[in-house]
Amino acid sequence: MKRNFRFLSALTITALSLAAVSCGDSETNDPDKVGPKPVVTIDSNNTGIINIGGQVFVIPSPIQTADLISKTNAPFDSDLLNPTENASGYSDYFKKALNMGIYGADLGYLAVYNMTDKTTAYLKAVRGLADDIGLGNAFNDELAKKISESLGDEGKMLELVSEAYKTADDYLKENKKDDVASLVIVGGWLESLNFACGAAEATGNQEIIERIADQKNVLKTILAMLKQYRDNEDYDDLAVELEDLQSLFDGITYTYEFVEPVTNEGEKKTTISCKHDVSITKEQVAEISALVKSIRNDIIE
Image: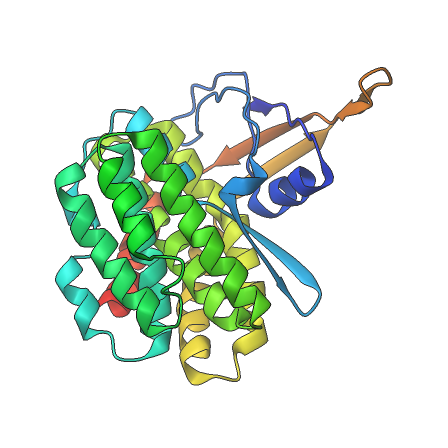
């Protein structure tokens, strides 16, 4: 599978190099290789960016994955969501922060499928957890009102949810609570991977399978981010589980062949291209899906 990478800014370069998000234009007849993918660009506002100890970590937004899944005509699956009744059972900030990220991804999933009847309950769950960990200002009455008024408007809903999580993230950074911010990001990422695995099982869609394969490098980034806190038993236990998942991703193979960059002096833009082959089997997808479910169940129960 050949791919062309287009880097538009320094931040985009960082996002692409860490997240391994890419695009392509050739086909393959190998059932274990993903198919062609149109040119994509990365919106830096749709990533979780966190600076810890002078290091910048970039994690793709869960909303990107939910949007991809809906566009591939994968059916909505309520079983992939974390039931809202679980929210009241989380007693410590560790699980509250992780599940705040999970419920945030659930809100995005509901929005792209226009499941307006469930949105209010999930917003309530997020607000409750946000209040518990000191983020009530991001999910206040004004936001709830705006979301209620925007039910059925997918674009506006996603904008509001993203805005609220950005406000929460800004607050955590300003108050030097990067440890909590990292948990929210991990929860959202894990839930989006859960969506992708569920959709892959249901449809076998190659674009979704490719999104799963792309998480190999994202997971490396997440483990590097959590490394800062592994002196805490909860963080270490989570990292150990994710390392088990990383061992499965290590079986996915990539081949890169970079070609000479082309610079447009007039537009002051440089296009860097490469060929990118990725190979992932159905068995690997099944193994990754099973472990993702297991890790997620440990978090949401």
